[in-house]
Image (cartoon, rainbow, N blue to C red; front, side):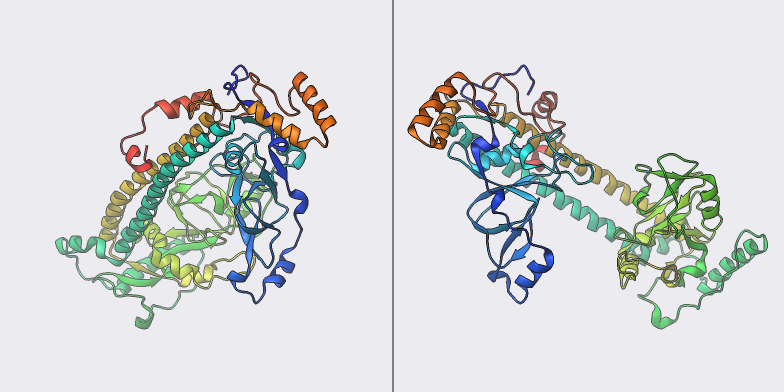
Length: 530
């Protein structure tokens, strides 16, 4: 809506306190330890849902409420993310904590109408804070709300929920396709590292039999040459792999090795988090920058030259090296370094330098496979932050085919995964378009353009007048209140013709027109149901 645009005939501007009862005063604070004590030993059917800012967060033994209510996040809700709801409905027995406002619609509207509007509203200027946004009750009470006639509200809610049902079905289909692609990706990698992917290739390209010992001997010779040249520090050789340690059989010509024996270098970044700033001399890479596709340079920080030189003297990532997240929730993600410049790393990322006998992209496939992921994440150490130690990485068993077959595996994996990548990008674009369409529908709903107006509907102004009359304490005051209302808009009302509300950020009229009038890409209509 623009400032110059008027509300449809029969609509009025008002605010939440006019249209809903606020039940925040009935909230009872309770800490987690007390709540856990109250539910200890009880089964789920003896408990009631316990709700927070964005949904149910647990259970408790007794309810505060037993009715349908509208909850609106007070803090820690995604107020600036139009793709995520900030309000939701609850039914039946419940307990609501202090992180959600509690509203009950008055007779002039419904909880479901308020729900959809509050999930379409742009909260910029209404919430405070930076990392943890907060919507105070005082600020919430000033949220402007366009009120249609009650009958039209019902038509709006019915139409929105009909369209959202179709849209949600399409989104669910897209997400299911994304999961199928993830499974297919893992099946490709599994086939790659077990030899199944290149079975036909081996038949067509019989290679001279070579023992794993011969391959390992060449890698050792390469390492010894680098040690003599002063380019590598001499390290103790790990034990060979016994037959009873081998996880599964390998094709002829393949061998199992301990990772530490076949890498030129295995280390990690600094264990002392240095001062890092938005500007500096050298890039500072941590786990948040490591993605399957490579190093992500957004939200990058820098260290000065002195700090970098100290870190780089032990951990020197170079073009083509393999990087592996070994600490925290994203442990197991591997990437190939494509930065042709020195940079510093934190200890959450391991550095793996490949021998000439190992193609870095083949090693990346091994590290990204479900086999290696499960081995590494099994029995991770640490309490506050779980981690894979360098010792565990060094002793991990890695399967190696001959160099020529590694190259064939890399080519086959890239061919298949490039198709998966393209499909995943298409599906991600579908989800973004679906969200724009959802916001477009909400915008149309609350500007009077989703359902037709009916001249026989009782105007919203009469609904508000009855609310004022019902709220008046006595006949004399009610009469005075009605006289005052005839001379001025309701407190919090702006009247027809004045813009007070606004859609959530990024849903201006231009965006609405683009979503509503531009045809969706081929296949989207079927996927999303539009």
